[in-house]
Image 1: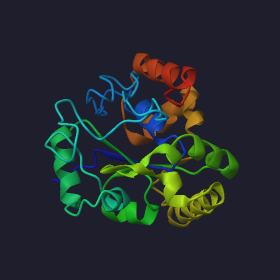
Image 2: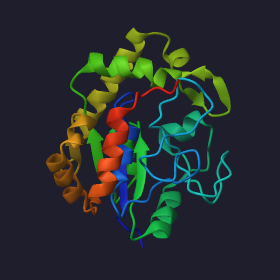
Image 3: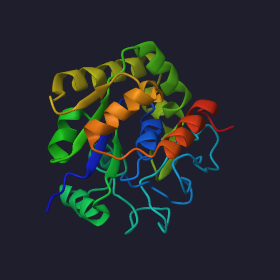
Image 4: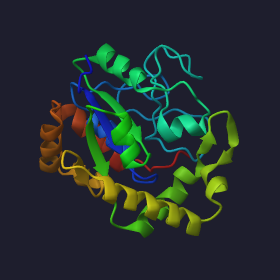
Length: 235
């Protein structure tokens, strides 16, 4: 059975999708990627020996994952992430199997893919879309965070800044991504303009009700404290 227990977080790069993921994963029926580098809980920082990596990052790995490539504790990359990592075996069936494995908990999947492609791939899933309104702020944060990340996990010298070349090209790419979102939002999608909106508990509660996920207020407070009190960049 293709259960609808999947929450797809779709956001442009630089729009704090991993902060969003940690906030949503504070809920009782959302599975947290508790691989050792991600932290045992969503309010614990990402542990990485690479400088300029955000503390809020997390990989799609669960406890016991080997840490490289795809194993039985790793949710595989799909769409643009699969292409960038030259992973050619991804299919919707991979996601179906993970949803069944985690049921009744929700599988959380953060994405930067085009929204139309994400809708096609993640059938029978719940979508939470981040649609930023301040492009300059988004570019600034991209240059602080995403610009430092490697495009392909097998080549840790070639970053997204290398890929785009400069801030002007980044801005154009982000503008195109936002337009794609606007063109393809469905009535069933839940749309926010900024992850910061979820720091308002009443707003967070409304979003969780729409996603049919169970708030754990103590865990929510811990994640909120973590993401609002820490610098986004690991020194």
